[in-house]
Image (cartoon, rainbow, N blue to C red; front, side, top):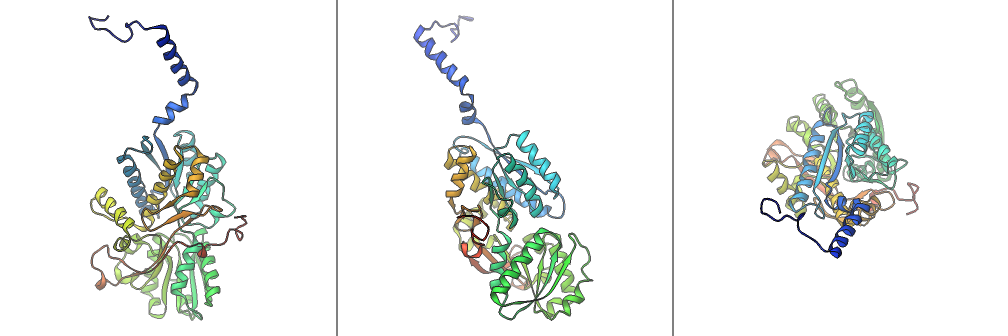
Length: 415
């Protein structure tokens, strides 16, 4: 008794009850991971370039990823476990990304990694994760990550350059088209160029000029005379982020759009907002997502509505949507696997069919590439815009198909 109140510690217990209690304690102590796993927060590492020329797209990815986590936690978590997103700035630098990813794994004890927004940076992240048997879902365009850099722990949620350019070329090139290319001189630009030339060959379009420009170039005027004298009827600009807005604006200023159509592999929401509508008017390009899908796609409407509710009426962007689909698909797989054990989650991802924002998606088993729809968009004239967010017309929405990917055998996989 303590102050007249009987406590559990002071209450006499029988021998049998004591033995049962001790056995239970001993069982828990011998397998502490059982109790810990049941309550432990699911931690997802999220390296992305919060600073630098891709910061706008990266911050959009974070917002969408945070939405996926919030929706999971609002329904009670995953199998009763809360989810936490650990965001780290990789500064668009491969070395920085590797360091931050290593910290996420060894210090923060994450259960999986999602993120990166650069061809080279995602390969650095993948090198760290696969060496430590850590599940990684990349959300930036890359062909290489499904080739020699692939591992059983590597999944690629983003479109890849082969599928993006195949669909964009199909709706932009014709037999006999003469195409000039202005290409950022790094992995993203080179992979997009390779994809376009592959597609052009099948269509019967002709390459008349290839010009490389440095990443982050401020002045494109020196390239314009070569483009104008090439005889091209299509200028294909393969770059990303601020480079896209700057290069298109200068091309338009020098009259390129008066002589040829401008095509880009990925038509970026944020870069269109960075300049006047007249600059991008008529420019065609691909996209993984556009908020206007909500008119025909229930899952897009649900995603947009949840995003608006969380972020004061704003809408998700194209690259931002990758943050949502990447994290949400991972959490669906963890739920189906009944926990975070990597091999079980890998098997669940390989079997997963999901429609959470843009129609049905699934990961191809041989290379873990997400098979998904590819949109072709055309930038609207100012007079055709119904609102400030009404940026693009959906020219085509090709459903998920393995036909736009390189075959498993072409990539060196057995199936």
